[in-house]
Each structure stands twice: as structure tokens, then as C-alpha cells.
Length: 171
Image 1: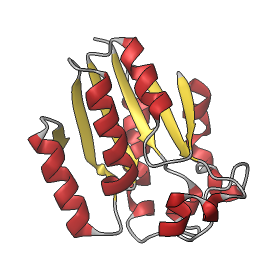
Image 2: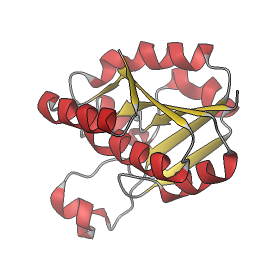
Image 3: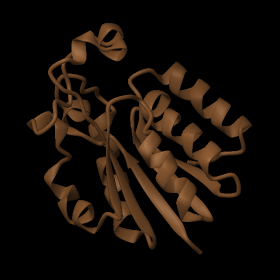
């Protein structure tokens, strides 16, 4: 079976940096366990911003500098290095969702696409919706124990919407 695991934005700035939150470091081992045991393509997204971030639509709504390209906050924790080296593809994205990721997925004919990472109701949600539309016949799975949000209510709402779309939410 042709499968992919997408790790969304598990970057230092979301873990313990400028937008860090309590639950983010708690999912690290769950993500690493998925990576260690996964038999398929590894795909990673990196939230990536530049000097003009505060002038962008996102920057006006989330006015906190984060994930500046090439900064420590932009990087993933060191334990992820072996998996990044093994990655089929790494996507830098300037918005919540990655059109490049969706276009890549559209061309791959994956039977199953699995997701984990940060932030559940924002970037993880956005990329699942894009994949859902790019891969019409793929089974899509979200690993809820390997995803986190700073807002439990919004996370629950996002999971409920994803479930209504037919996304399998693994507990």
C-alpha cells in the first residue's frame, strides 16, 4: 500500500518558542514513535516566515514573529534530524496550508495519508482539507495523540468537522 505520513509544523517556535504552548512538547514522543515505525513516504511542512510577516494577512491577525526562515525557532528538534534526512519531500509554507503539498499529493496516488503535528485546528486542519481535495480516493487519518492545540474547544470542533468529512481520527 502506498502511504504517506505528513508531519505538520513540529517546530521549535510552536514547542517552546514565541508561540509555544503547554501541550506541544507533550506530543513529541508520539510523533517520533510514528516516524520510527512508519513504512511509507515521510513528508514534512515547515511554517516559514520572512521579514515582511507582520505586513501579511496572517501577521496582522497573529502579530507574533515566529518561524523566521533559518532561525532556531524555524527548526525542528534535533531528534527529528534522521527522519528529515529520510523525507521524501519537505515543504516550506507561508500560510496555514501548503498548496505545494496538496499538488504533490495529487500526483502521488497515495492510498493512505496520515497526519500529525501542530497546531491541530489551524495548520494540521488546513493541510488535511487540502489533501482531502487533492487525493479523492485516499484514506485520510489524523493521529490525535500526535497532534495538539492551545485551544481544546477549537481542536474538538476541528476534529468533529474532519470526522464529518470522513477523516479517520485515531485516538
